[in-house]
Image 1 (cartoon, rainbow, N blue to C red):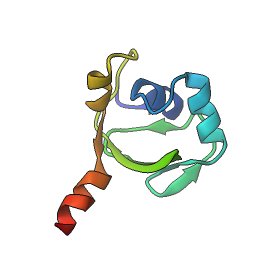
Image 2 (cartoon, rainbow, N blue to C red):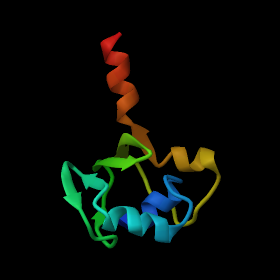
Image 3 (spheres, rainbow, N blue to C red):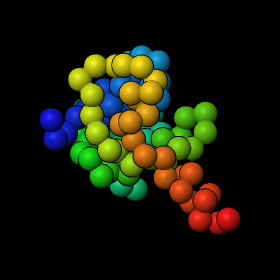
Image 4 (cartoon, rainbow, N blue to C red):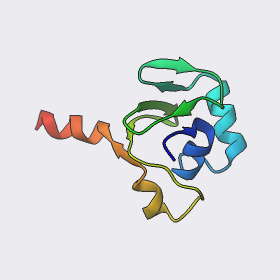
Length: 92
């Protein structure tokens, strides 16, 4: 699999509890892909894309992989690289 819908990915990566909540988050304009705001839950993302998700707090992550199912939290964390933590380490 080389691409996946953004709503499925957000759900599999455990950013939200349900896929419909992921679709609502995207439809509301709280998600950016490579800096561009998206409003369609059907938008496809690829490994290497940078997502900015403004939900409860702003998270900036790089897509590393995909999953066919929603798994354990440890498996979900393997789907992305948190770029905000890298920026914090650079300041030290």
